[in-house]
Length: 260
Length: 322
Image (cartoon, rainbow over all chains, first blue to last red; front, side, top):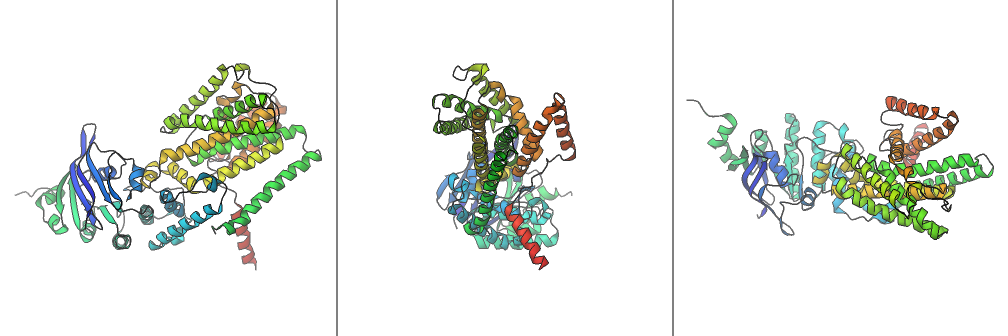
Protein backbone atom coordinates (compact mmCIF):
# COMPACT_ATOMS: atom_id res chain seq x y z
CA UNK A 1 0.00 0.00 0.00
CA UNK A 2 1.29 3.43 -0.83
CA UNK A 3 0.35 6.83 0.48
CA UNK A 4 -2.17 8.48 -1.81
CA UNK A 5 -2.87 11.73 0.01
CA UNK A 6 -0.52 13.39 2.46
CA UNK A 7 -1.67 16.29 4.61
CA UNK A 8 0.99 18.19 6.55
CA UNK A 9 0.38 20.76 9.28
CA UNK A 10 -2.72 22.20 7.69
CA UNK A 11 -4.05 25.33 9.40
CA UNK A 12 -7.20 27.33 8.72
CA UNK A 13 -7.88 30.65 10.43
CA UNK A 14 -11.15 32.52 10.05
CA UNK A 15 -10.11 36.04 11.11
CA UNK A 16 -8.77 35.11 14.53
CA UNK A 17 -10.65 31.86 15.01
CA UNK A 18 -8.55 28.79 14.31
CA UNK A 19 -10.96 26.24 12.85
CA UNK A 20 -8.29 23.70 11.94
CA UNK A 21 -4.85 23.80 13.53
CA UNK A 22 -1.81 21.78 12.53
CA UNK A 23 -3.60 18.72 11.25
CA UNK A 24 -1.42 16.09 9.63
CA UNK A 25 -2.81 12.90 8.21
CA UNK A 26 -2.40 10.49 5.34
CA UNK A 27 -4.57 8.20 3.27
CA UNK A 28 -3.30 4.99 1.69
CA UNK A 29 -4.67 3.54 -1.54
CA UNK A 30 -7.82 1.45 -1.15
CA UNK A 31 -8.19 2.44 2.46
CA UNK A 32 -11.37 3.34 4.30
CA UNK A 33 -10.61 5.93 6.95
CA UNK A 34 -13.05 7.66 9.26
CA UNK A 35 -12.85 11.16 10.65
CA UNK A 36 -14.83 11.62 13.84
CA UNK A 37 -15.21 14.30 16.45
CA UNK A 38 -17.80 16.26 18.39
CA UNK A 39 -19.93 18.90 16.64
CA UNK A 40 -17.91 21.96 15.67
CA UNK A 41 -14.62 20.08 15.82
CA UNK A 42 -13.71 21.22 12.29
CA UNK A 43 -14.40 18.03 10.36
CA UNK A 44 -16.34 19.64 7.54
CA UNK A 45 -13.88 22.54 7.44
CA UNK A 46 -11.09 20.02 6.95
CA UNK A 47 -13.10 18.43 4.10
CA UNK A 48 -13.56 21.85 2.54
CA UNK A 49 -9.81 22.46 2.77
CA UNK A 50 -8.95 19.10 1.21
CA UNK A 51 -11.37 19.61 -1.69
CA UNK A 52 -10.41 23.23 -2.27
CA UNK A 53 -13.77 24.80 -1.41
CA UNK A 54 -11.86 27.13 0.93
CA UNK A 55 -8.09 27.80 0.76
CA UNK A 56 -5.74 26.67 3.53
CA UNK A 57 -4.04 29.33 5.66
CA UNK A 58 -0.85 27.27 5.79
CA UNK A 59 0.35 23.73 5.43
CA UNK A 60 0.49 21.39 2.48
CA UNK A 61 -1.75 18.81 0.84
CA UNK A 62 -0.09 16.51 -1.67
CA UNK A 63 -1.71 13.96 -3.95
CA UNK A 64 0.43 10.97 -4.91
CA UNK A 65 -1.84 9.86 -7.69
CA UNK A 66 -1.60 7.51 -10.63
CA UNK A 67 0.10 10.16 -12.73
CA UNK A 68 2.66 11.55 -10.33
CA UNK A 69 2.78 13.88 -7.36
CA UNK A 70 0.74 17.07 -7.21
CA UNK A 71 0.44 19.70 -4.51
CA UNK A 72 -3.26 20.53 -4.04
CA UNK A 73 -3.18 23.58 -1.79
CA UNK A 74 -3.98 26.79 -3.62
CA UNK A 75 -5.70 24.95 -6.49
CA UNK A 76 -9.32 25.82 -7.29
CA UNK A 77 -11.92 23.23 -6.34
CA UNK A 78 -12.73 22.21 -9.91
CA UNK A 79 -9.08 21.36 -10.65
CA UNK A 80 -8.83 19.30 -7.48
CA UNK A 81 -12.00 17.47 -8.53
CA UNK A 82 -10.46 16.76 -11.94
CA UNK A 83 -7.38 15.31 -10.23
CA UNK A 84 -9.57 12.68 -8.65
CA UNK A 85 -10.84 13.99 -5.34
CA UNK A 86 -14.62 13.89 -5.14
CA UNK A 87 -17.05 14.46 -2.31
CA UNK A 88 -20.58 14.50 -0.99
CA UNK A 89 -22.01 17.23 1.19
CA UNK A 90 -23.33 17.17 4.73
CA UNK A 91 -26.32 19.29 3.77
CA UNK A 92 -27.24 17.67 0.45
CA UNK A 93 -26.21 19.80 -2.51
CA UNK A 94 -27.78 18.13 -5.52
CA UNK A 95 -28.77 20.05 -8.64
CA UNK A 96 -32.34 20.11 -7.41
CA UNK A 97 -34.21 21.30 -10.48
CA UNK A 98 -32.43 18.85 -12.78
CA UNK A 99 -33.15 15.18 -13.37
CA UNK A 100 -31.27 12.31 -11.75
CA UNK A 101 -29.66 11.57 -15.12
CA UNK A 102 -28.53 15.18 -15.57
CA UNK A 103 -27.05 15.21 -12.08
CA UNK A 104 -24.84 12.27 -12.98
CA UNK A 105 -24.02 13.51 -16.49
CA UNK A 106 -22.87 16.88 -15.12
CA UNK A 107 -20.28 15.10 -13.00
CA UNK A 108 -18.90 13.58 -16.22
CA UNK A 109 -18.54 16.96 -17.94
CA UNK A 110 -14.79 17.15 -17.53
CA UNK A 111 -14.32 13.58 -18.74
CA UNK A 112 -15.14 14.31 -22.37
CA UNK A 113 -14.07 16.89 -24.87
CA UNK A 114 -16.79 18.21 -27.10
CA UNK A 115 -16.05 21.24 -29.19
CA UNK A 116 -18.51 24.03 -29.86
CA UNK A 117 -19.32 23.57 -33.55
CA UNK A 118 -20.14 19.80 -33.48
CA UNK A 119 -22.35 20.43 -30.45
CA UNK A 120 -24.22 23.36 -31.93
CA UNK A 121 -24.86 21.74 -35.30
CA UNK A 122 -25.40 18.23 -33.95
CA UNK A 123 -22.66 16.37 -35.78
CA UNK A 124 -22.76 12.55 -35.47
CA UNK A 125 -19.87 12.79 -32.99
CA UNK A 126 -22.16 14.71 -30.63
CA UNK A 127 -24.71 11.88 -30.56
CA UNK A 128 -21.93 9.35 -30.11
CA UNK A 129 -20.47 11.03 -27.01
CA UNK A 130 -23.95 11.64 -25.56
CA UNK A 131 -24.89 7.99 -26.02
CA UNK A 132 -21.64 6.86 -24.47
CA UNK A 133 -22.06 9.14 -21.45
CA UNK A 134 -25.69 8.17 -20.91
CA UNK A 135 -24.79 4.50 -21.04
CA UNK A 136 -22.07 5.00 -18.46
CA UNK A 137 -24.37 7.00 -16.20
CA UNK A 138 -27.03 4.28 -16.44
CA UNK A 139 -24.54 1.63 -15.37
CA UNK A 140 -23.59 3.68 -12.33
CA UNK A 141 -27.23 4.32 -11.42
CA UNK A 142 -27.98 0.62 -11.71
CA UNK A 143 -25.42 -0.22 -9.04
CA UNK A 144 -27.37 2.03 -6.68
CA UNK A 145 -30.76 0.79 -7.91
CA UNK A 146 -31.68 4.22 -9.19
CA UNK A 147 -32.18 3.20 -12.82
CA UNK A 148 -35.94 3.69 -12.65
CA UNK A 149 -35.61 7.26 -11.41
CA UNK A 150 -33.51 8.69 -14.24
CA UNK A 151 -36.14 11.24 -15.29
CA UNK A 152 -37.16 12.28 -11.76
CA UNK A 153 -36.13 15.74 -10.60
CA UNK A 154 -33.55 15.44 -7.84
CA UNK A 155 -35.66 17.54 -5.46
CA UNK A 156 -38.53 15.02 -5.71
CA UNK A 157 -36.47 12.06 -4.52
CA UNK A 158 -36.89 10.77 -0.96
CA UNK A 159 -34.23 11.93 1.46
CA UNK A 160 -32.28 8.66 1.64
CA UNK A 161 -32.26 8.37 -2.14
CA UNK A 162 -30.94 11.93 -2.45
CA UNK A 163 -27.98 10.90 -0.27
CA UNK A 164 -27.42 7.89 -2.53
CA UNK A 165 -27.58 10.07 -5.64
CA UNK A 166 -24.92 12.33 -4.13
CA UNK A 167 -22.62 9.33 -3.87
CA UNK A 168 -23.39 8.28 -7.47
CA UNK A 169 -22.69 11.80 -8.67
CA UNK A 170 -19.38 11.86 -6.81
CA UNK A 171 -18.42 8.48 -8.30
CA UNK A 172 -19.24 9.71 -11.79
CA UNK A 173 -16.20 11.98 -11.66
CA UNK A 174 -14.11 8.77 -11.46
CA UNK A 175 -12.34 9.74 -8.25
CA UNK A 176 -9.27 8.22 -6.65
CA UNK A 177 -10.40 9.48 -3.27
CA UNK A 178 -14.01 9.86 -2.18
CA UNK A 179 -14.90 12.10 0.75
CA UNK A 180 -18.22 11.25 2.36
CA UNK A 181 -19.56 13.93 4.71
CA UNK A 182 -22.04 12.28 7.09
CA UNK A 183 -23.63 10.03 4.47
CA UNK A 184 -25.90 8.40 7.06
CA UNK A 185 -27.21 11.61 8.62
CA UNK A 186 -30.96 11.45 9.10
CA UNK A 187 -31.27 7.82 8.02
CA UNK A 188 -33.13 5.13 9.96
CA UNK A 189 -31.27 1.98 11.13
CA UNK A 190 -32.31 -0.07 8.10
CA UNK A 191 -31.20 2.62 5.68
CA UNK A 192 -27.93 2.89 7.60
CA UNK A 193 -27.33 -0.84 7.32
CA UNK A 194 -28.03 -0.69 3.60
CA UNK A 195 -25.70 2.26 3.22
CA UNK A 196 -22.91 0.45 5.06
CA UNK A 197 -23.15 -2.44 2.62
CA UNK A 198 -23.22 0.02 -0.27
CA UNK A 199 -20.06 1.80 0.87
CA UNK A 200 -18.20 -1.50 1.19
CA UNK A 201 -19.45 -2.52 -2.26
CA UNK A 202 -18.41 0.79 -3.82
CA UNK A 203 -14.93 0.60 -2.37
CA UNK A 204 -14.37 -2.94 -3.59
CA UNK A 205 -15.83 -2.32 -7.02
CA UNK A 206 -14.12 0.96 -7.82
CA UNK A 207 -10.89 0.44 -5.85
CA UNK A 208 -10.98 3.85 -4.30
CA UNK A 209 -9.87 5.40 -1.08
CA UNK A 210 -12.67 6.68 1.15
CA UNK A 211 -12.52 9.24 3.93
CA UNK A 212 -15.72 9.27 5.91
CA UNK A 213 -17.14 11.73 8.42
CA UNK A 214 -19.77 10.05 10.53
CA UNK A 215 -21.39 10.42 13.93
CA UNK A 216 -22.85 6.93 14.04
CA UNK A 217 -20.20 5.04 15.99
CA UNK A 218 -21.40 1.54 15.14
CA UNK A 219 -21.18 2.41 11.44
CA UNK A 220 -17.69 3.89 11.86
CA UNK A 221 -16.38 1.00 13.94
CA UNK A 222 -17.74 -1.50 11.41
CA UNK A 223 -16.36 0.19 8.33
CA UNK A 224 -13.16 2.04 9.11
CA UNK A 225 -9.72 0.55 9.00
CA UNK A 226 -8.28 3.59 10.70
CA UNK A 227 -9.82 6.51 12.55
CA UNK A 228 -8.76 10.12 13.07
CA UNK A 229 -10.38 12.01 15.95
CA UNK A 230 -10.65 15.77 15.63
CA UNK A 231 -11.48 18.03 18.57
CA UNK A 232 -11.38 21.84 18.69
CA UNK A 233 -9.65 21.88 15.31
CA UNK A 234 -6.70 19.67 16.15
CA UNK A 235 -6.05 15.95 16.01
CA UNK A 236 -6.86 14.35 19.33
CA UNK A 237 -6.09 10.76 18.45
CA UNK A 238 -5.53 8.37 15.57
CA UNK A 239 -5.46 4.63 15.27
CA UNK A 240 -7.47 1.49 14.66
CA UNK A 241 -11.09 1.33 15.88
CA UNK A 242 -10.00 -0.73 18.90
CA UNK A 243 -7.35 1.78 19.88
CA UNK A 244 -9.77 4.70 19.53
CA UNK A 245 -12.48 2.98 21.58
CA UNK A 246 -10.15 2.59 24.54
CA UNK A 247 -8.37 5.94 24.19
CA UNK A 248 -9.01 7.97 27.38
CA UNK A 249 -8.64 11.35 25.61
CA UNK A 250 -11.35 10.39 23.10
CA UNK A 251 -13.70 9.16 25.80
CA UNK A 252 -13.15 12.42 27.64
CA UNK A 253 -13.91 14.53 24.57
CA UNK A 254 -17.13 12.63 23.87
CA UNK A 255 -18.46 11.85 27.34
CA UNK A 256 -16.68 14.29 29.64
CA UNK A 257 -14.44 13.48 32.58
CA UNK A 258 -15.28 10.95 35.23
CA UNK A 259 -16.21 12.48 38.55
CA UNK A 260 -14.77 10.70 41.56
CA UNK B 1 -33.11 7.10 -28.12
CA UNK B 2 -29.99 9.19 -28.35
CA UNK B 3 -28.48 7.94 -31.59
CA UNK B 4 -28.18 10.05 -34.70
CA UNK B 5 -30.83 8.05 -36.55
CA UNK B 6 -33.36 8.15 -33.74
CA UNK B 7 -33.13 11.93 -33.63
CA UNK B 8 -33.04 12.44 -37.37
CA UNK B 9 -36.84 12.13 -37.50
CA UNK B 10 -37.38 14.90 -34.95
CA UNK B 11 -34.78 17.13 -36.54
CA UNK B 12 -36.46 16.70 -39.93
CA UNK B 13 -39.84 17.57 -38.40
CA UNK B 14 -38.37 20.76 -36.94
CA UNK B 15 -36.87 21.63 -40.32
CA UNK B 16 -40.20 21.07 -42.06
CA UNK B 17 -41.95 23.25 -39.49
CA UNK B 18 -39.48 26.06 -40.08
CA UNK B 19 -39.86 25.87 -43.85
CA UNK B 20 -43.64 25.67 -43.55
CA UNK B 21 -43.65 28.77 -41.34
CA UNK B 22 -41.61 30.58 -43.93
CA UNK B 23 -43.96 29.71 -46.79
CA UNK B 24 -47.03 30.50 -44.69
CA UNK B 25 -45.81 34.04 -44.03
CA UNK B 26 -44.65 34.38 -47.63
CA UNK B 27 -48.07 33.37 -49.01
CA UNK B 28 -49.90 35.65 -46.61
CA UNK B 29 -47.75 38.56 -47.76
CA UNK B 30 -48.25 37.74 -51.45
CA UNK B 31 -52.03 37.46 -51.02
CA UNK B 32 -52.09 40.72 -49.12
CA UNK B 33 -53.38 39.33 -45.83
CA UNK B 34 -50.21 40.63 -44.21
CA UNK B 35 -49.74 44.28 -45.13
CA UNK B 36 -46.52 46.19 -44.61
CA UNK B 37 -47.77 47.28 -41.19
CA UNK B 38 -48.10 43.70 -39.96
CA UNK B 39 -44.87 42.68 -41.72
CA UNK B 40 -43.17 45.41 -39.73
CA UNK B 41 -44.58 43.93 -36.55
CA UNK B 42 -43.34 40.46 -37.51
CA UNK B 43 -39.80 41.74 -38.03
CA UNK B 44 -39.84 43.51 -34.65
CA UNK B 45 -41.10 40.32 -33.02
CA UNK B 46 -38.35 38.33 -34.74
CA UNK B 47 -35.62 40.69 -33.54
CA UNK B 48 -37.06 40.61 -30.03
CA UNK B 49 -37.06 36.79 -30.11
CA UNK B 50 -33.35 36.75 -30.96
CA UNK B 51 -32.61 39.23 -28.16
CA UNK B 52 -34.76 37.49 -25.57
CA UNK B 53 -33.61 33.90 -26.24
CA UNK B 54 -30.02 35.08 -25.75
CA UNK B 55 -30.93 36.85 -22.52
CA UNK B 56 -32.91 33.81 -21.36
CA UNK B 57 -29.78 31.71 -21.83
CA UNK B 58 -27.90 34.07 -19.51
CA UNK B 59 -30.66 34.60 -16.93
CA UNK B 60 -32.73 31.43 -17.10
CA UNK B 61 -30.13 28.77 -17.76
CA UNK B 62 -26.87 30.17 -16.39
CA UNK B 63 -28.69 31.99 -13.58
CA UNK B 64 -26.75 35.22 -14.10
CA UNK B 65 -28.96 38.29 -13.82
CA UNK B 66 -27.76 40.57 -16.61
CA UNK B 67 -29.29 43.96 -17.33
CA UNK B 68 -26.90 44.97 -20.08
CA UNK B 69 -28.28 43.24 -23.14
CA UNK B 70 -28.96 46.47 -25.04
CA UNK B 71 -25.26 47.34 -24.93
CA UNK B 72 -24.34 44.25 -26.97
CA UNK B 73 -27.24 44.96 -29.32
CA UNK B 74 -25.79 48.46 -29.86
CA UNK B 75 -22.42 46.98 -30.84
CA UNK B 76 -24.03 44.89 -33.58
CA UNK B 77 -26.21 47.77 -34.75
CA UNK B 78 -23.32 50.20 -35.07
CA UNK B 79 -21.03 47.62 -36.69
CA UNK B 80 -23.61 47.20 -39.44
CA UNK B 81 -24.42 50.90 -39.72
CA UNK B 82 -20.77 51.90 -40.07
CA UNK B 83 -19.65 49.08 -42.33
CA UNK B 84 -22.54 49.08 -44.80
CA UNK B 85 -22.02 52.81 -45.46
CA UNK B 86 -18.79 51.93 -47.29
CA UNK B 87 -19.40 48.24 -48.09
CA UNK B 88 -22.84 48.78 -49.56
CA UNK B 89 -23.67 45.21 -50.57
CA UNK B 90 -25.23 42.08 -49.05
CA UNK B 91 -21.72 40.68 -48.59
CA UNK B 92 -20.81 43.82 -46.67
CA UNK B 93 -23.93 43.40 -44.54
CA UNK B 94 -23.09 39.81 -43.59
CA UNK B 95 -19.48 40.77 -42.96
CA UNK B 96 -20.76 43.50 -40.63
CA UNK B 97 -22.85 40.94 -38.70
CA UNK B 98 -19.69 38.91 -38.29
CA UNK B 99 -17.68 41.91 -37.12
CA UNK B 100 -20.48 42.84 -34.71
CA UNK B 101 -20.36 39.34 -33.23
CA UNK B 102 -16.58 39.46 -32.80
CA UNK B 103 -16.62 42.91 -31.16
CA UNK B 104 -19.48 41.95 -28.85
CA UNK B 105 -17.65 38.76 -27.84
CA UNK B 106 -14.60 40.85 -26.92
CA UNK B 107 -16.80 43.32 -25.03
CA UNK B 108 -18.62 40.47 -23.25
CA UNK B 109 -15.28 38.99 -22.16
CA UNK B 110 -14.06 42.35 -20.86
CA UNK B 111 -17.34 42.94 -19.02
CA UNK B 112 -17.86 39.35 -17.93
CA UNK B 113 -14.50 38.37 -16.47
CA UNK B 114 -14.65 40.88 -13.60
CA UNK B 115 -18.43 41.13 -13.13
CA UNK B 116 -19.50 37.48 -13.31
CA UNK B 117 -17.92 36.98 -9.88
CA UNK B 118 -20.78 39.08 -8.53
CA UNK B 119 -24.14 37.63 -7.67
CA UNK B 120 -27.78 38.61 -8.18
CA UNK B 121 -28.56 42.31 -7.98
CA UNK B 122 -24.88 43.29 -7.84
CA UNK B 123 -24.32 41.65 -11.20
CA UNK B 124 -27.45 43.34 -12.58
CA UNK B 125 -26.13 46.77 -11.62
CA UNK B 126 -22.63 46.03 -12.92
CA UNK B 127 -23.88 44.83 -16.31
CA UNK B 128 -26.27 47.78 -16.51
CA UNK B 129 -23.29 50.07 -15.91
CA UNK B 130 -21.23 48.27 -18.56
CA UNK B 131 -24.02 48.66 -21.10
CA UNK B 132 -24.27 52.38 -20.27
CA UNK B 133 -20.51 52.71 -20.83
CA UNK B 134 -20.93 51.18 -24.30
CA UNK B 135 -23.80 53.57 -25.04
CA UNK B 136 -21.87 56.63 -23.81
CA UNK B 137 -18.78 55.68 -25.81
CA UNK B 138 -20.96 55.47 -28.93
CA UNK B 139 -22.56 58.77 -27.97
CA UNK B 140 -19.17 60.50 -27.97
CA UNK B 141 -17.49 59.03 -31.02
CA UNK B 142 -17.36 60.78 -34.38
CA UNK B 143 -17.57 57.64 -36.47
CA UNK B 144 -20.92 56.71 -34.85
CA UNK B 145 -22.50 60.10 -35.52
CA UNK B 146 -22.65 61.06 -31.85
CA UNK B 147 -25.97 61.62 -30.11
CA UNK B 148 -27.81 62.22 -33.39
CA UNK B 149 -27.11 58.67 -34.50
CA UNK B 150 -26.87 57.36 -38.04
CA UNK B 151 -29.32 57.70 -40.95
CA UNK B 152 -29.79 56.17 -44.37
CA UNK B 153 -28.35 52.86 -43.42
CA UNK B 154 -28.80 50.65 -46.49
CA UNK B 155 -31.56 48.10 -46.03
CA UNK B 156 -30.39 44.54 -46.47
CA UNK B 157 -32.43 42.96 -43.72
CA UNK B 158 -35.95 42.13 -44.84
CA UNK B 159 -38.34 39.71 -43.21
CA UNK B 160 -36.82 36.53 -44.75
CA UNK B 161 -33.36 37.50 -43.42
CA UNK B 162 -34.80 38.05 -39.96
CA UNK B 163 -36.78 34.80 -40.15
CA UNK B 164 -33.68 32.78 -41.05
CA UNK B 165 -31.65 34.49 -38.34
CA UNK B 166 -34.34 33.73 -35.75
CA UNK B 167 -34.21 30.06 -36.74
CA UNK B 168 -30.42 29.97 -36.77
CA UNK B 169 -29.83 31.68 -33.41
CA UNK B 170 -32.58 29.63 -31.77
CA UNK B 171 -31.09 26.37 -33.08
CA UNK B 172 -27.68 27.38 -31.77
CA UNK B 173 -28.97 28.36 -28.33
CA UNK B 174 -31.31 25.38 -27.91
CA UNK B 175 -28.62 22.93 -29.03
CA UNK B 176 -26.19 24.58 -26.67
CA UNK B 177 -28.64 24.17 -23.78
CA UNK B 178 -29.26 20.49 -24.59
CA UNK B 179 -25.64 19.46 -24.55
CA UNK B 180 -22.80 18.82 -22.19
CA UNK B 181 -22.13 22.57 -22.20
CA UNK B 182 -25.74 23.36 -21.34
CA UNK B 183 -25.75 20.91 -18.47
CA UNK B 184 -22.59 22.49 -17.08
CA UNK B 185 -24.19 25.93 -17.38
CA UNK B 186 -27.34 24.74 -15.59
CA UNK B 187 -25.30 23.17 -12.79
CA UNK B 188 -23.74 26.56 -12.15
CA UNK B 189 -27.25 28.02 -11.78
CA UNK B 190 -28.30 25.22 -9.42
CA UNK B 191 -25.35 25.17 -7.02
CA UNK B 192 -21.96 26.75 -7.66
CA UNK B 193 -20.15 24.93 -4.85
CA UNK B 194 -21.46 21.51 -5.87
CA UNK B 195 -20.68 22.25 -9.53
CA UNK B 196 -17.07 23.10 -8.69
CA UNK B 197 -16.76 19.96 -6.58
CA UNK B 198 -17.81 17.97 -9.66
CA UNK B 199 -15.00 19.45 -11.71
CA UNK B 200 -16.96 22.23 -13.42
CA UNK B 201 -15.00 25.43 -14.06
CA UNK B 202 -17.81 27.79 -13.09
CA UNK B 203 -16.16 30.98 -14.35
CA UNK B 204 -15.61 29.42 -17.77
CA UNK B 205 -19.21 28.24 -18.18
CA UNK B 206 -20.73 31.47 -16.89
CA UNK B 207 -18.61 33.33 -19.43
CA UNK B 208 -19.57 30.90 -22.20
CA UNK B 209 -23.28 31.55 -21.66
CA UNK B 210 -22.72 35.28 -21.31
CA UNK B 211 -20.63 35.49 -24.48
CA UNK B 212 -23.06 33.38 -26.53
CA UNK B 213 -25.98 35.53 -25.33
CA UNK B 214 -24.07 38.70 -26.15
CA UNK B 215 -23.15 37.56 -29.65
CA UNK B 216 -26.77 36.77 -30.57
CA UNK B 217 -27.71 40.21 -29.24
CA UNK B 218 -25.20 41.67 -31.70
CA UNK B 219 -26.91 39.79 -34.55
CA UNK B 220 -30.25 41.25 -33.46
CA UNK B 221 -28.65 44.70 -33.37
CA UNK B 222 -27.35 44.32 -36.93
CA UNK B 223 -30.81 43.31 -38.18
CA UNK B 224 -32.41 46.18 -36.25
CA UNK B 225 -30.06 48.75 -37.79
CA UNK B 226 -30.38 47.45 -41.31
CA UNK B 227 -34.16 47.08 -41.19
CA UNK B 228 -35.02 50.42 -39.55
CA UNK B 229 -32.21 52.25 -41.40
CA UNK B 230 -31.92 54.75 -38.54
CA UNK B 231 -30.29 54.27 -35.16
CA UNK B 232 -29.34 56.52 -32.26
CA UNK B 233 -27.51 55.78 -28.99
CA UNK B 234 -30.69 56.35 -27.01
CA UNK B 235 -32.33 53.34 -28.70
CA UNK B 236 -29.98 51.16 -26.69
CA UNK B 237 -30.47 52.56 -23.20
CA UNK B 238 -31.59 50.88 -20.04
CA UNK B 239 -35.22 50.87 -21.21
CA UNK B 240 -34.32 48.60 -24.13
CA UNK B 241 -32.53 46.17 -21.76
CA UNK B 242 -35.58 46.16 -19.53
CA UNK B 243 -38.03 45.56 -22.35
CA UNK B 244 -35.98 42.50 -23.38
CA UNK B 245 -36.00 41.38 -19.75
CA UNK B 246 -39.79 41.76 -19.67
CA UNK B 247 -40.13 39.31 -22.57
CA UNK B 248 -37.95 36.77 -20.75
CA UNK B 249 -39.73 37.12 -17.41
CA UNK B 250 -43.18 37.15 -18.96
CA UNK B 251 -42.57 34.04 -21.04
CA UNK B 252 -40.94 32.16 -18.20
CA UNK B 253 -37.35 32.33 -17.02
CA UNK B 254 -35.80 29.12 -18.33
CA UNK B 255 -38.27 28.45 -21.16
CA UNK B 256 -37.27 29.22 -24.75
CA UNK B 257 -40.81 28.36 -25.89
CA UNK B 258 -42.07 30.88 -23.36
CA UNK B 259 -39.78 33.53 -24.80
CA UNK B 260 -41.28 32.94 -28.25
CA UNK B 261 -44.83 33.16 -26.93
CA UNK B 262 -44.13 36.27 -24.87
CA UNK B 263 -42.35 38.03 -27.75
CA UNK B 264 -45.32 37.37 -30.02
CA UNK B 265 -47.94 38.32 -27.40
CA UNK B 266 -46.16 41.54 -26.45
CA UNK B 267 -45.44 42.39 -30.10
CA UNK B 268 -49.11 42.02 -31.05
CA UNK B 269 -50.27 43.81 -27.91
CA UNK B 270 -47.93 46.68 -28.64
CA UNK B 271 -49.22 47.05 -32.19
CA UNK B 272 -52.90 46.73 -31.29
CA UNK B 273 -52.58 49.23 -28.47
CA UNK B 274 -51.09 51.86 -30.74
CA UNK B 275 -54.66 53.04 -31.42
CA UNK B 276 -55.09 53.84 -27.75
CA UNK B 277 -52.54 56.65 -27.80
CA UNK B 278 -51.11 57.52 -24.41
CA UNK B 279 -53.28 54.90 -22.70
CA UNK B 280 -51.10 52.29 -24.41
CA UNK B 281 -48.36 52.23 -21.79
CA UNK B 282 -50.91 52.02 -18.96
CA UNK B 283 -52.68 49.01 -20.49
CA UNK B 284 -49.32 47.41 -21.31
CA UNK B 285 -48.08 47.84 -17.74
CA UNK B 286 -51.37 46.62 -16.33
CA UNK B 287 -51.20 43.45 -18.44
CA UNK B 288 -47.71 42.80 -17.07
CA UNK B 289 -48.77 43.34 -13.47
CA UNK B 290 -51.75 41.02 -13.86
CA UNK B 291 -49.64 38.23 -15.36
CA UNK B 292 -47.04 38.61 -12.62
CA UNK B 293 -49.75 38.39 -9.94
CA UNK B 294 -51.55 35.37 -11.36
CA UNK B 295 -48.62 33.55 -12.97
CA UNK B 296 -45.38 34.70 -11.33
CA UNK B 297 -43.29 32.03 -13.05
CA UNK B 298 -44.21 33.54 -16.42
CA UNK B 299 -46.66 32.34 -19.04
CA UNK B 300 -45.01 28.94 -19.52
CA UNK B 301 -42.78 28.57 -16.45
CA UNK B 302 -39.96 26.27 -17.54
CA UNK B 303 -42.11 24.22 -19.92
CA UNK B 304 -40.67 23.53 -23.38
CA UNK B 305 -42.38 22.42 -26.56
CA UNK B 306 -40.88 19.15 -27.77
CA UNK B 307 -41.65 17.32 -31.00
CA UNK B 308 -40.24 14.15 -29.50
CA UNK B 309 -42.59 14.23 -26.52
CA UNK B 310 -45.55 15.06 -28.76
CA UNK B 311 -44.78 12.06 -30.95
CA UNK B 312 -44.29 9.67 -28.07
CA UNK B 313 -47.54 10.80 -26.48
CA UNK B 314 -49.61 10.26 -29.60
CA UNK B 315 -47.94 6.88 -30.06
CA UNK B 316 -48.82 5.92 -26.51
CA UNK B 317 -52.43 6.99 -27.12
CA UNK B 318 -52.64 4.85 -30.24
CA UNK B 319 -51.37 1.88 -28.32
CA UNK B 320 -53.95 2.40 -25.60
CA UNK B 321 -56.78 2.79 -28.11
CA UNK B 322 -55.83 -0.31 -30.08
